[in-house]
Amino acid sequence: MVVAIGCDHAGVELKRQISWLLKGEGIEVMDVGTNSAESVDYPDYGAVAAEAVSNGQADAAVLICGTGIGMSIVANKFKNVRAALCRDVYTAKMSREHNDANVLVIGSRVTPGELTEDILKAWLHTKYEGGRHDERLKKISMIEGTIELKT
Ligand code: RB5
Image (tube, rainbow, N blue to C red; front, side, top):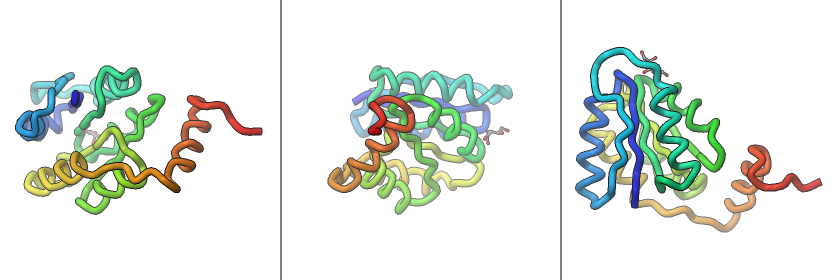
């Protein structure tokens, strides 16, 4: 499994921690930066990771910015990307079971480091439930234009 990971200047330290955790899970990490505390624009990094998920280069991505909001907005512009901003373990699980989220977004300034580890593990190890959720995801694909709209 390949997981892309990206952040802005607010998430560099947390990106390092998450990369280490991902590698510990036997996951191949595609690090798209940034790697310094110098102020950068989150769309530049979020777009690279989200594009990798959208075109199948990566199976999933983890994005980090201060609140997680900017990265979520950017990632959800990409086709076939379902990005979920998670601040607790329950939301992380639900984002997989119900929404088949393929991008996890974390706000480094609002989520404590220890909780981030639990959120990440819950997200990685929870499977999509399918069933009634398939029709809902299909409707999202219709809205984004990746499958044809029913008339
Ligand atoms: C950067 O200061 C901050 O705006 C960014 O990390 C993020 O929170 C945006 O949504």
